[in-house]
Length: 262
Image 1 (tube, rainbow, N blue to C red):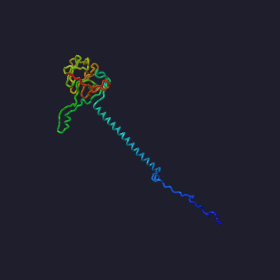
Image 2 (cartoon, rainbow, N blue to C red):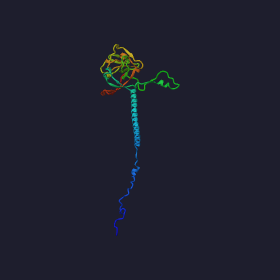
Image 3 (cartoon, rainbow, N blue to C red):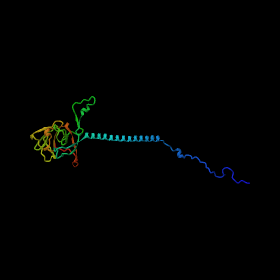
Image 4 (cartoon, one colour):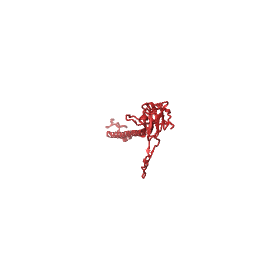
């Protein structure tokens, strides 16, 4: 008798019901990608923040330095300009019709600057010059100049503005409504038909201008306090010469010294 039952044990088959599981190798990306801990990230962020603050500090410091440079330069320019020119506002009617009250002027402060040449030369060794030799790099006050000067009257605190009529050593007289310098009548075309009087003085009154002084009058002869009342003005009291009228703008112009016959 033949036994057709299969032998004991698992059936034989070409395919096994069990497959081996292969281990998965990490990819290249996984092997080389860096990993950071929370401490590393905090350190990196702090480093970036410190660098940013440093750059911002440098930028703010640069801006402050530029502002400081600009302010210092502006101050130097301002001081330099102030040593040369001065703003002046006409207050009063004494210079009409040439100047009107409220008119703004630039006054040249250096046009009459001068120095003693002998005192400069005496700085050299073995040189001792006596006396003074005054030198004007530009020129001393001239007849016809409109000048601004310190108030000659103690009760007044504002500078005066008048026109130079006579120079040092010259003789001034006023008669028949006209001004005479060294015996010759001045042709003052800027006055129009206005007559000049010297209140309290006779027609034969004359005044000789002292050294380093000028005799000044306002163009509005009937409404001006000038050398007819307070006398000649010292060079040392003169602040400068009217140079440019700049406001109101329709009156803009450069002052020219008129010509005279004496």
